Length: 109
Length: 115
Image 1 (cartoon, helix red, strand yellow):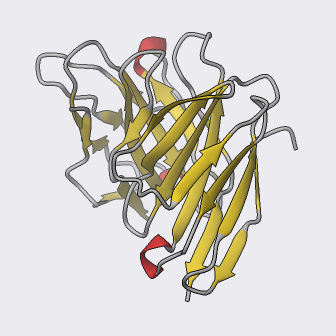
Image 2: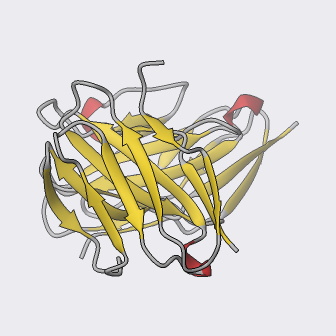
């Protein structure tokens, strides 16, 4: 069965410190992995996806198929990074997108 | 605003009443999703459409829930005989399935409160 696990409900990090939001998944096949973000009073939006191999707002995420992980990282946290972050998985282009429960990232001044 | 729009934004209803929500996706998007989100949880998949065809419905979804996308454009989600446990944010998203990856664009959601 498809499953996305985000073990941390809340992560507090000081401004300028590195950030790592953990995501593990379960899927028998080749999934597409995503990170979505929801800033206060805004709609859920895509942050990045593994197939693009891009860095968005300083965030990167590497798909580790051996560990079935897709952790989100940023070397230096900024106050505007405070938000809810959701890891998501899609089995294929014909499959639904399922989400983890989310991690609230709180950047301390 | 050319993004995904949902109507109404808020709905308060009495237990036992029926409610219907509407979602207008981005016009060229052929895929449409419905999710439910409760406090402290991530979006929970309910159902999704490819054009007008309903591809999958969550096994967690009771028979009181039904969704349609009659012309492959807008979609409606109806909840019959609402219960207090139905109180949640209902999110709609759309995507263009043919492009690489399945980036979904979300609406602002409809917040349902059952009293």
